[in-house]
Amino acid sequence: MGQDLINMNEFAVAVALEEGGRVEANIAEIKEILRITMEELGKFADEQILELIERYRI
Image (cartoon, rainbow, N blue to C red; front, side, top):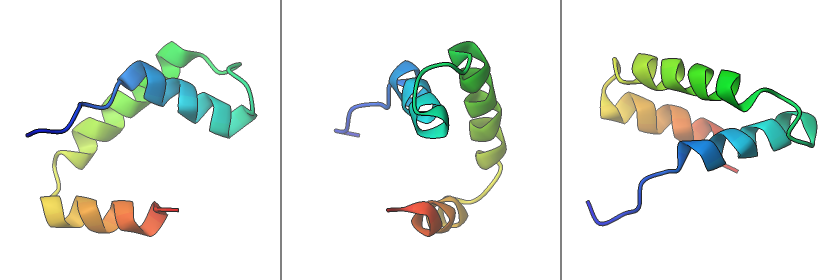
């Protein structure tokens, strides 16, 4: 693998900051939504996931 794993706590805080400009959203709720999102993404082929990510890359 060679790459560091994404820290889901830091990722959830980044989402909260992007959404509201401050960490007012419940981090536990965001982490649960991210978990469900990852489970659903896991049902798709790698190529489909990469294509989706490319659509949102800034």
